Image (tube, rainbow, N blue to C red):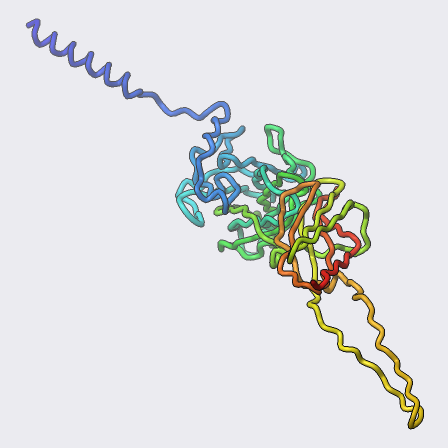
Length: 370
């Protein structure tokens, strides 16, 4: 009689041990925001500077009262509107790629809301492009008013726990708006940071198309922030070719068939020289002969003048160095004896509200023939 009881007790003990090792417990809703997972090592970091731009990282972070936001993104909503509910699409709703996307939605009143991410480690006054796929669901006739923006100052828009904002960063560059319902549409915008950071903003402010009570669903997926180049890797022309004094102490040094140009700037800025090389042309004596009589002539020699440099017409550029420095140096090569080099140094730098290209008085350097 004791053996069956012993076997039963032994079996019950084994079940308890297994249950403890597996960890049987009901899954409860978190009462505080979950910890953000560590940033992954991304092989494509050179082409997408956003963390979790594809919204695939799990789990989404919980925020009061019952919102879920993609990791490394923050929710925001305008205090003068209403706060929508934020959630993971959880594979049940639409998503552009992968298995997840960010959605926020509301029945009844319209909202002005979205998500944002501050990106650091950027290079000032060089172009970056933000793109993302947007989609809006609502009643026919509703206007999505979805767009993406880049704030060049890198504002942390909603540092408070509720995500509310009164104003959006005033210097934000915005894309065009999405105007069609129920389709994925890529929106993009380019701008230059004024420092080493920018804020990527995904924005939606849908509006009703009739007096009916509307619902609004705003979806975001496949967001990318990537560096871009200036057209032909050339700095934009200055607003004025009159020097401001930002560039100073310009020096030149000839060496063989090359010319070294150096200068300093009042603050950190990029480096490039715009120039032109006038090839050496032998001058053949030319005179104008006027016949005075059969025995007398008057000779009028040709008067030669140095070229007048017009930097806006220069067609050559040295390689652009976007690293912000205060001491600059470039080398122009391929110069032949007798050539004339006309040049102007350029440096692009931030002001309080934008980036501008600074210049200097044009220089004319002659390379004498041997």
